[in-house]
Length: 549
Image (cartoon, rainbow, N blue to C red; front, side, top):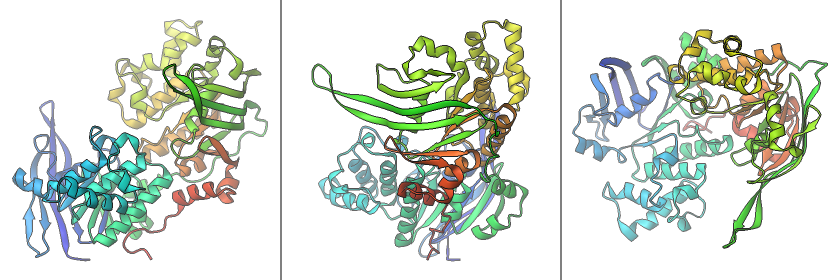
């Protein structure tokens, strides 16, 4: 190992809530050597991010530090204590010797300032060029992180860039002063799989060329396996295992590490029932949003969000729809549910359910059929009303679609549905904020299942969850499908989840279907180049770190 750069010893971090101390980090010790990539993995609440934020002393005034030492070594070998260092000294360290890239670039970038100004500010704060003199080095760094036509985009605002481009701007801001250590806190979680692969390659390339160390924080074990030299596993604010990536992933020693490694999506779904009837038939589905211009707001063109989608869905089977952001996945699903207003878009094609074409029906005629066509959204916390108890949330649909039930009957249905998704029926008297992420997703499932639908549309239902919670939800979905012959339309950019759950796959790009067919054929012998690129980005676990060939 190279000379040490960062040493954390016996770090303890407490937060005070309602007069009581919550021990977020307890006795954490770890090292990062010069030029080394160290991954910190663990579930939400394990203390990963709190540890990283403590390195830069960004929790002052919010957290208490009852114990611990954080030492940063200089090129001369002398160590500087960061714990309790004066704020003026920490401002000199932040963004200069140690930089940080956060998970969501849109919330990290100032929407009122151009990207050129924001990158230039990072240089100016540490004695770099100012004003017009900064434009050339800013353009050079933006080009270095792979932003196309960087020299002409200095005056662009964050909202004018894609998610991947915004993350590249954040990387440029973090690296412009050539830090000794880069802390990356879930920097690719919000990105599509192909963009994630590009950002990983970019990080690895820049890390080698600059010779910097990296502390990579994530709950994605596959990602750490690709980029890191060593891995630190955290649980409940403590380090439970550490070691070289190859050893930890191939022969984990701690039970929690073994649980994490075993939670990655794997396997294939059992075949659907041989006598399964067709429940949904979609032909020639198109959704075109008008582009209006001029004083009279006349339609001058259309955005072809969905441009010709066909599929069949049988009971007890799952169709996976995959593609990058903007490919039309969610728009196609919402069109099937008739959740896109005709006043906002032109809807064409055939959506046949229960012998009726939903595309031709007025909204009032579609509403009763929604009892059999339900949806579960990506963010369970955002889709559940914080002002309503769980019983009211789950039973709300019964008030509309089951007028034959009185209050006692609805309560009994809610209790039974909560049992079906693995929750205590007494949970119906509590509120969403009192539950974990996995439990909230079970509540969202219960809200959809209480009406006993035929088709369930799942829009990225596991992407916001940790691996172990993700496994719980996937196992629950498999069990529900086997017992109740539910048909799923599963929308995701995580191909590992799609392979584990879906019988058929539909690949979309720019509103069009580029490939579709049985999952084993799509994953085993993809015919389209775009599909092959998606699969390579998702399943190629080749190392991209400094030891890569």
